[in-house]
Length: 388
Length: 141
Image 1 (cartoon, helix red, strand yellow):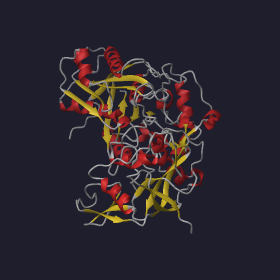
Image 2 (cartoon, chains in turn brown, cyan):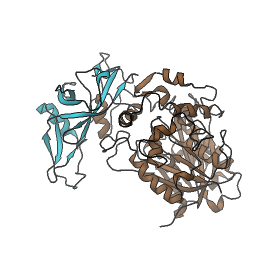
Image 3 (cartoon, chains in turn red, orange):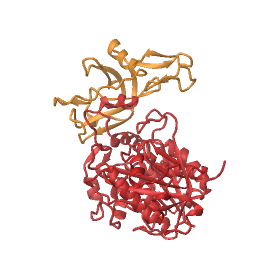
Image 4 (cartoon, rainbow over the protein chains, first blue to last red):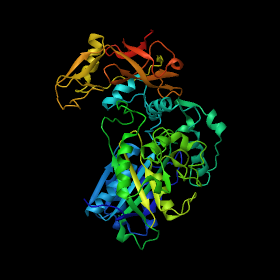
């Protein structure tokens, strides 16, 4: 088997503004973000011969190709399972480029989670469940992502004796980072520990400020062969590893049949392979963008990826000093899904690239390795980028 | 405990497929919780499946369950997302003695009284005219 290590690189980033009412279609935002990424990369639209987006995206690839006049795609795919597919889009691109199916692949996600007809935070009362397990859960009022994660979190808190408020620093550090990022939705709004503690409980044990922020926006990212990446506008973000993970006995966000529901099994499994691919250990990661749809998922990821031992994740984030920009492992430097915006994880990949380029609004010094993770509680994905 | 609102918006009914409808049919017709059990290797499954994940036999039967278990985890909805459910309400994850887990509600205790480790037993709640739900009550020692 060939090792894909650093034979591909991310060369272009594009995005719309992030808002709570974009006033236009997901397709239009996708087109804006892709054109922005093409310009950023310094390539031509006609150079694109591969395309990957999420299975949930309404901005269809055939429309994007038609409207941009892209001549031919020789590879196209979709990454499933919501935010779990974020880094998977890059993994598909790497697989396509490595196999020779394509040279230059655009990955994108366009979403109207704040103003569109389908939002992930709420439940449509007239909806009929299509999945076996959701059909088992919905009649009991277990309806929304925050409750699906809260079920894991309650058991996690019980197992490790976590008290109310101990997760606050995920939200607070995210907000501090967003306050330095003019593109973040919460750029101009600070968050204090008192405000966090006084915020309403959505689904116990999770408060409003433990949850990500419904957002409208699109992000596009261009991946190409490493040898084509060298003389473009930006320093390439070389892809050291990109991978997906699906473990047994899972469901989409309600994998409660597994023996230990305080462990993110798919992350544990993909993490081992991802670090092997990159040839490094967690200690060598300089900055991380953890998928932070809900705050307990950050300590659970620290444990699943081997940054800390089982049950040590909350101690690690407490007080925030280890995860701030001057800490051992700075995280979510653009504000993350909680405070920059929820582009279903695609914005975290963009920030992972900016850290390698040296253009983040919370730039970490001397970056070599930058980690990004995909959505949790679902089949997931991960990515390691390198500056060299 | 879940309390339903009288708002004319019904709560979601169980979704059934060719592979799962027997779970709900047995609950409605026999008024007792039944679980899927492999006739070859005796492994229990829930939610229902087509093939035994342990031995890959398609010969899965249905057996009555005592319905006894303990609360493995729970959540409490404080913010309403469906007009049919009155907040606050609790949703529980029960680990049954057969080794499988099931999502449900308590029928006899308030949300703040729910605790991990609480022993519970199944009751049948005729929520819909043609479909019953399995719910749980406390076992008092």
